[in-house]
Length: 151
Figure 1: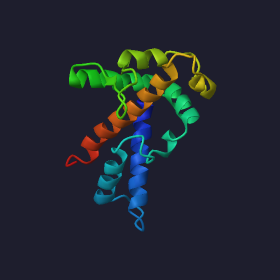
Figure 2: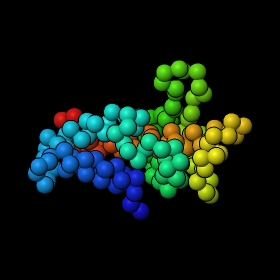
Figure 3: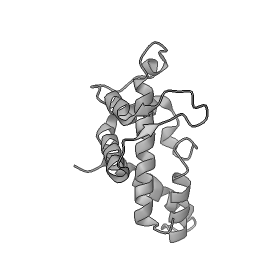
Figure 4: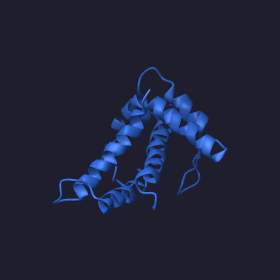
């Protein structure tokens, strides 16, 4: 089974590299390098235009749930430990483990925006979004090693 999320990440970055090579019609080595540098700055920068709106991301996290699980597994195999997300700035939020993310992705239907906003609901929709962001960043780094080994 092909990894559709990794294909999405590749397609998005290489399309950006092609646009960055303008007026040429094909991507160049330099435009590819710049596109990967921009893409690897994180999914909260706005560069990933599909990862701006929460409702769309909740649907994407459901669609790509198997690929997110594969990214978490690859991370564990590469690092020797399970992924743990910690709040970057405030540090006062709960740690979210790979198990929390996998549990959030095991739903039959995608999380809705209303469930995401519900203050009394568990934090599973947030864990699903964190999983999507992690997997996109993981695959961007993996592809960068393939396309731009000098990065």
